[in-house]
Amino acid sequence: MDEDAGPVVRPYALIGGRTRSSGDALDLVAMISATGAHPSGGFVPGPEQERILALVTTPTSVADIASELDLPLGVVRVLLGDLKDHGLISIGRASASERILKEVINGLRAL
Image 1 (cartoon, rainbow, N blue to C red):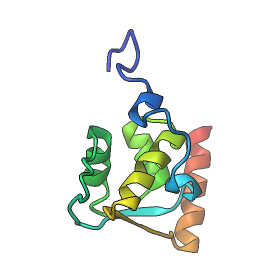
Image 2: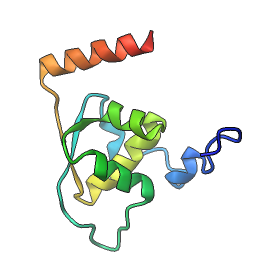
Image 3: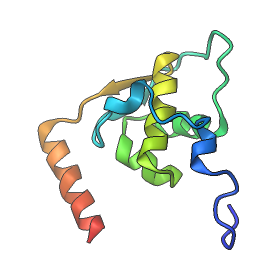
């Protein structure tokens, strides 16, 4: 990252120009966890996907992942979809009270 020039690699280049994947249905409060499986079938996670796998050793929301990586939500959803398709992550749901709390926190951050 170059502060003056912006990102060295544009977000769409990280996902090969794709705009859709199996991760499209992920909502902001879906909880992502690493399965501990190893990549198979010749799939090699990219650097951003490696960072995601390091982040989700404990359940982490999609919104928190996007925030931590400083990437657009659409890009993160595509990256997560690839990881899910290869069995490297599992997707869970936040409990209702946890979900409400996260929405309140996100609303406060938006102010």
